[in-house]
Length: 303
Image (cartoon, rainbow, N blue to C red; front, side, top):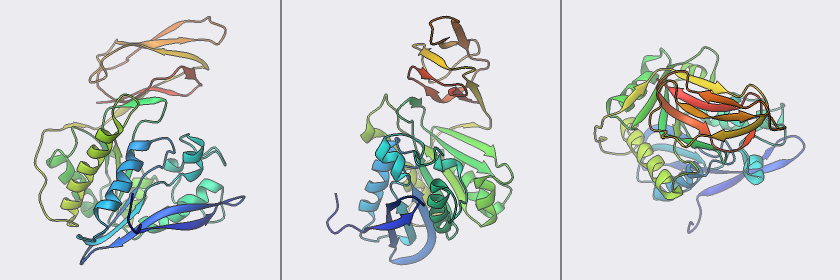
């Protein structure tokens, strides 16, 4: 992949085991802002991982301004086990912030990532659908109330960087709001699912990243302005019990209220229940596989 790789493997003590975390810390030819890019926060989301490695390869010549820190696979234990969570403690790294150096394995891992993000103007987190999911590509932005931080989100909306943008109010104490106090904009990019080509989804991630780097001033240029659908709310339909999920064959570009989403059945084959959309909106992600556990998200709907 690389001739003389700029990626170093940093040993991280997770308590009972030690992992090697790939990190590329690139300093550009000119002064400028700091951008941290992470991927593989969920260990089974591959388009973002692919895009992160391609991003490193694209900028090894350092022809940019500022500093670019890329961690292409954060959740090494989850990646090795081909699952979203960290199997060492069953926690999801994406939900942990800022972590603890003396905590659980996932808390220790995120303490390293959070320390890097504390130096950044923007933390850009690459995601996509897990092995069990489908997704409509979208950017997830937050209104934090911090003018400097929110300016980037407003620019991303203004230029229509993604066809779908979720722009939510940042809740006090959670990652986007906490990072905003440090002067860092937090962005989640979702592209990649079981139904699409990995190369296309990685290319979309790179296109979004290029526009973001232009708006931040890391590279020259201005994004081409496009139309976008901006959503400010997301609602969830979740499984009420364990069992079997049989999703309906439907168009996930837009769903109307009352649309049949699928059927839930108990493991003994009884208790058939039809699940319908409780409102209209744009599907953000949805469950595509049969195994069902209580609390699983069957559909996340943006409006």
